[in-house]
Image (tube, rainbow, N blue to C red; front, side, top):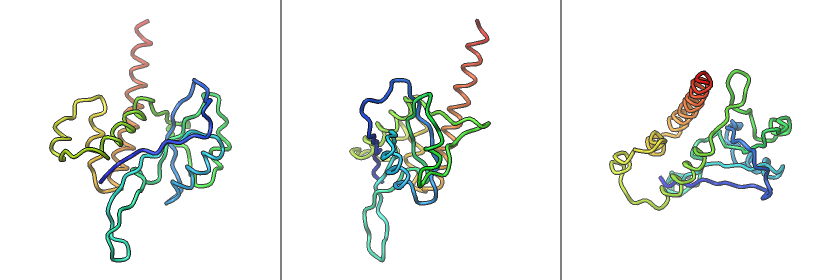
Amino acid sequence: MDMNIHSATSDSNAPRERTWYLIQCKPRQDERAEEHLIRQGYQCSRPTCRSERSVRGQRQRLTESLFPGYLFVNLPDNANWVPLRSTRGVSRVVGFGGRPLPVSDSLIVELQYRSAKAFTSTSNVDDKLSNCSSTFSELDVIFLTDDVKKRTLLFIDFVTRQQICLKSGRVASSTKR
């Protein structure tokens, strides 16, 4: 399975204070949601992968979402959420406790790096797993999971644990003052 991340924007003069958020799309409408978000001026990233599937009895190479049903959108801190939530293909903004789930810039950069690396890499699975030493080493296992549903669930679990770690780190640092 080859992987890549599609990142697009219609506004190259984006404000500096922006945060990435995870968006859940309606079933099989990732591309549609991304297209409509970009038309509205949002910056989006949708990790994709290339895989071989049997379509009508013939093996074909397809490009599909790495995490079907999800994409990332980069919003200014003072963003109006109403147009985002009413965009075609968008189901909801992923969040907990009534607050949207922010995704770190470093995770987006890591996804882009790993996706690009996966497209050009010729190493085998054992080599990839033995080199799991970065902060995001769990992503190796996620990227190497062929089952789409399992890969998506592992990723959602990973992102939510990243958020919990960030919040507990902030609490610890603020209590030391």
